Amino acid sequence: MAAYAFLTAYRKPVQRAVGWLLIPLGRATLHVFIMHVVLIAVVASIPVLQQGDLLINTLGYALVLGLLWAMVRTRFLFRIIPT
Image (cartoon, rainbow, N blue to C red; front, side, top):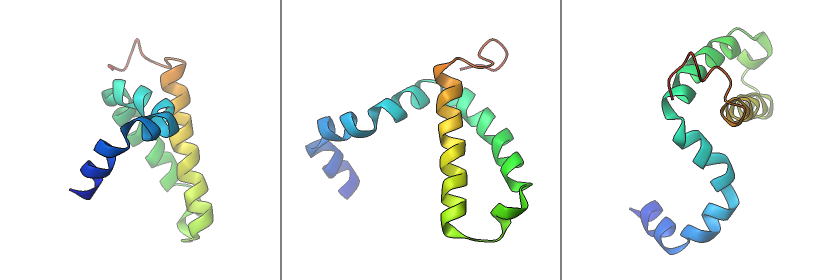
């Protein structure tokens, strides 16, 4: 309930801050879901990410999120995977 109240009160600043990232991902939700399953399987096979280091894991998953965003912006595999 607090998140809803916060976003209701501060919708415009939040949209300016993270809208560029979240809006494209939200518009291609099915594509992002399918591609994230593939990317998480790849990430799970990287040994350095299995050590539990918070900083390295955060950077790794931020990289995955950035890669998903780039895939949506460039429409990577949109003809094969539904949006």
